[in-house]
Length: 330
Image 1 (cartoon, rainbow, N blue to C red):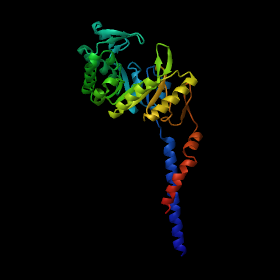
Image 2: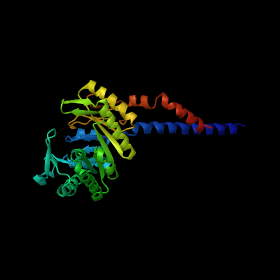
Image 3: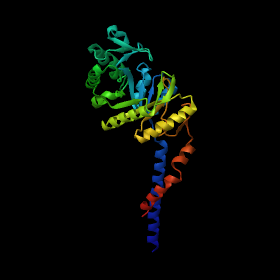
Image 4: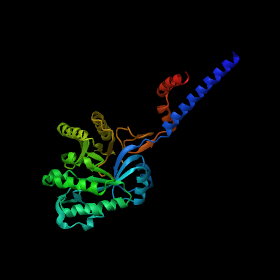
């Protein structure tokens, strides 16, 4: 019957139309969805170019003294946290001017910092009532707690450090808290932090030899043991590795090792930078950036739209779409 054939052809045509609309929507979504690198640690100043580049990261760890205008802009669409050391003072911090000299109990010559008595009630007051309020007033979403490893140098003060981290969470229950290392107290502080940063993941800067190095086998095994313990605590891990970003061969070598171990231990958030953290680094494993390839000078380069289309909507993606189309056309 001609009428029935005509109706069938119309039905088939409509199904084909729906199929190609679906295909177009899928490709459009892939091309326009921005995939961000997970996190960055950057202590340099921020201008328009740095602001643009920092916008490609989800979690942004910054110096508390950067331009607050940029902090507010970044925190509107990202998680921006400000640096505070829980065990040292460098003199540059806005809250350093109120530090009683009697709180200093040592010195870190590598960073030209004083070590404070972090078990002191006065230090807790400075952190809770001066340092963190200042950071939050600049537009930050939370804080990055550094130098928790000092509890290993002052084991009698471990409980004090745990209590300080807990006090921060209790005083500021809704902020983002990222803690740097502190493996020996990780179990105790895990309930109070959102992320734990694993600084010196696989690679580090050796102050004695004045160069970037890979940990030896025994040191790596110790670090991996700590990772397993952290995994059992259900704490989110951010891994920070170091390299000379101007050394092409070193970056290639270190990146291969870092990514091999990151895959082995299921760590997806990895960041590579130089020791100064005054330049913006990158994810050495390339898993998080969309439409960018990283040169070994540490500069992200945008690929062309044609390259993106070939990579994303090339022959491989059409196979599942064809299968989907067969179901639509039934």
